[in-house]
Image (cartoon, rainbow, N blue to C red; front, side):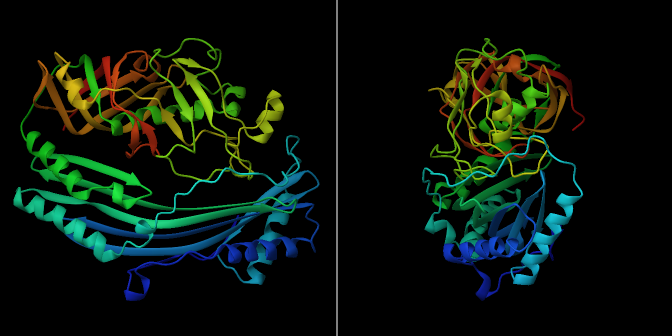
Length: 467
């Protein structure tokens, strides 16, 4: 349940170019107020989440900026427990009356729920490994900084006779979780993202990057990459559907393997909804495939604790092609007689847990080497409209877009009309021949992960698309 007005969204004036996050003492003050107010109710236990986001976005199209927005909001989410029942209510008003109303709403909802036999007492104090993903350069970025980068990208498009569109965003956020048993955890980070589509009729291409450190993003380089591909894709030829060797750029890899993340959840396995049922400990993927869940990886983002405030652990999920471990919330760990790994979602929820920081081991090749080693194949920029066809065999369908190129005799020779694919991810990860070093990849169908580019044999394209 939410008790809230809409968060503020506005075009930034000189006074709203950026906003500082609340000091941690103020976060603690909000939490302590909620916990103190809850003592006068029949709540047996109380949990508080405080989330603050200050985000700015510059959007451009037709070679010019057309929108610049800023949003700064704080939400307080209260979970109460009463007689084996639990519920949550949320508000974005911080005055005492609104916090009291959120507590009362949470209790009212809890009283209307059936008892949860799997509900555990809230955890007490925890120890956390510190991660620092708050980058001052990102926090200090102004609308003028973003505008200058966008202007250079648009100037490139104009010079090339192309049309540019996209976004440049930056911001900062923090979260804190605490409960009436003494647990307290807090985390803050910065984030930045640049995405650009370059169009040269009738073709278009795309590039995107995401990082906590805006200095790791080169908007001009991304613009040049998208521009070059768009120009190459102006003239396409149509190939017959079938099985091809493909070179998937990291964004294409990400948006496919992202559909695997929930399969490593203990709750999904327990409910027989995972492709790993009856396959744990067996050779499922190629021996060159290893996957970890690792929030501490230097290219990752996110808090080092889960929705209940438990420390996240690094978990080796796949070891040389063999699924080895799952991630557990407190409830699923107790059911499986395992230890929790710190990957539970905030309660109450129907999903249990999931790994949110997947890291593929990668290889030592490069896109250039993959192309040079390919007699005949396709270079794939990215994929879209991806849907699951067979959950157990992990057969996915979708389409290529924004640049599909033919590789012949070790070089890119031209553009190809887009394909629809029907491909099992399990089979795909058995057929990986080469991988690049893993990078922080960002796409459109999945959240960011650390994945490599991949050269894969026998990738199945079922039909040519109509565009």
